[in-house]
Image 1 (cartoon, rainbow, N blue to C red):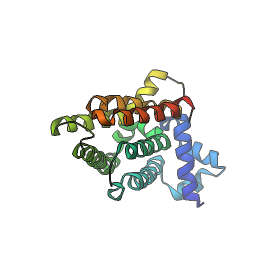
Image 2 (cartoon, rainbow, N blue to C red):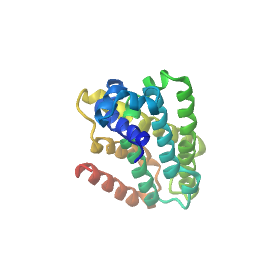
Image 3 (tube, rainbow, N blue to C red):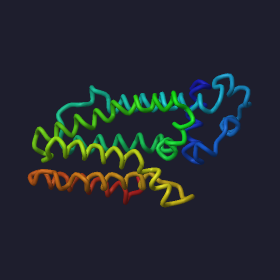
Amino acid sequence: MKTRDKIIHAAIELFNEQGEQNVTTNHIAAHLGMSPGNLYYHFRNKEDIIQAIISLYAQDLHHHFGPEQVGPVTLQVSMGHLDHIIYVMWRYRFLYNNLPDILARDPALRELYRKLQAPIYGFMQRHMESLREQQILLVNAEELQNLVHIMKQILLFWIAYMHTLQGNEAVTKPKIYEVIPRVLFLFRPYIAPAHQAELAELERYFQARINNGE
């Protein structure tokens, strides 16, 4: 792995473990056993490192939620997409935890982040519309928009919410998975009776992930 990539991945690890606001470039350099000068050869400051992390985050979003990922939609397909959402939230959990502060420090980064979110929100919109067209999701256009909007809010701020509740206690992956039963609960009243058993299967799957500490 190239030195630049090592710095990026070390920063993600430390930001996730200790909180982005508590980690400096000196901490990252020390973690890698390199001099600060060597780190500054690749990145001018911590904000540059965060920008590089956001670029990596963008790649993950495109890989899991790009236009080519949209195909025939079922609730079983939804399960895979929800798993991908948890993967991204877990890998970049520091970002979800401290997002307003990080973006407030850098207007250019704030604009970049907003642009990056457009594809995933578009993906969610198309996915829900497909469920509606197949009469799996029984909602009108206004209800669908409200459901998607609320789901965005829950997913985007879930980690910050958990940190607020737990204080200094670390947010584990099972704790992040706990957001999925909440999302499924939100949609349950709108799932067609013929697909309620399939929804219950999804709920059992994600509850097992939580119980097993995955």
